[in-house]
Image 1: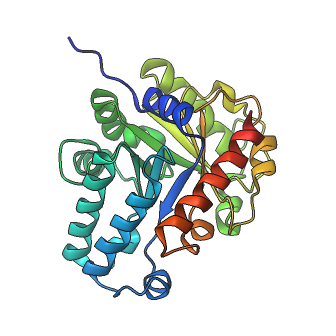
Image 2: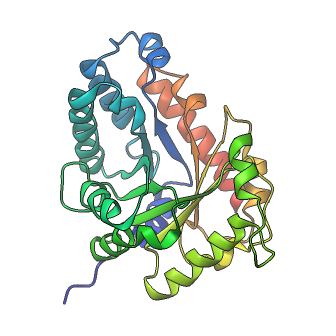
Length: 277
């Protein structure tokens, strides 16, 4: 039986080769206009191609915000399919920021869409756990079989989210820390099939992320306020490749020139590498 390489293993190797940064690909109407592109499926496709050409060989991964493609319906999803294929061919790991999650039967369909063999399949997909982490088991099972990862949205910087995530369970621990513990336990059975999304703008919680057993995606660098120094301090103690900081608007605002995008990504990547060393 062929052993499947996990997403966590591929991420560690990619970060070792390039550096610790994922670029968000978020083709909002504002950015499309700023880049001189039409706000339609054709504009989305050109935006995605330009991002792949700029970030390939410079960064280990890209994070595609699915909502900006979905707003254009079937044509927008077709543009996303093309982007995923281009990114894979360019050697980039791809995270689909789709924030899926539902009861088990629906999670099975989400798993087929984002973690199986279909045209939307990515190396990792984000998911929401607030219907219960166990309800995501079809996604986790398929991620394990295909060497992919479910990145569970545990700690976010938005005010509305904090009220829920910091609420205390009947066991006397914060809900977010209880979720971290569940992910760590699941990873003891299926190593690396689960990871977590943790806002880089937040001070650490009581859970030691070094014991998570899976990768941490840390959005919020740049426009949301987190600096490389913040990342280095808040995620200290994690092994190389265990945390993947992400920046979107602060990088994309440097476009549309490919050279400017590449230079900005390389500069931020190197600053993060120094901070996390």
